[in-house]
Picture 1 (cartoon, rainbow, N blue to C red):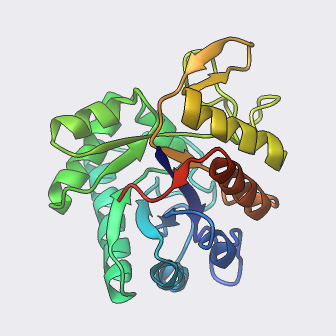
Picture 2: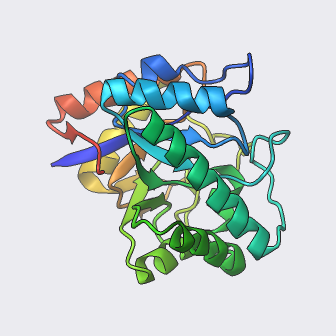
Length: 251
């Protein structure tokens, strides 16, 4: 069996760097590259795409609300037409950077508050899918299993790639625990690695209330904005290898 391993990269701005892009690109198989709306800038986008091309890592568009100050983690009640335009703008920006760097845009994954909102927010889910339709390429889309926007994307004929988060806790209904909730983020690399193997083999995990829920995923995400991101990603990849699970990009 095989599974993809993805991380959020290029999440800095100007001289400020949050993610260890070069190191993580030697470990993960898919890179969710910030497109300038929650983090990132043209220089960083180009650098990450070039490094991804050299490493043979798939490049994905990490689209977000226009929210640099809040790092894209605040819900914005944006007009659907405006959201469509914002997402379309980001898709074209990272697509151009990827092509100019000797690689190609392979998939789309929303970021932060947008990612969580379009699990259930009908109007915004439709707005994101409309941007994908207007973009005119059948790019796979990555998101939380059961998300409304994934259903809409599938109805448009797009490939849906469900993902799981071994470094985040879940609520009993299969959603990510809100940041700030005690235990929402798991920081011990070995614990994250053990959870990753369980996700891949059993499609199960223990929710915050102690219940067991099913989580079917084709990709595992390790957050890149953590001081232990590189160690965690390496521990996850090593654990998957020891469990005889092939780690490779889905696209």
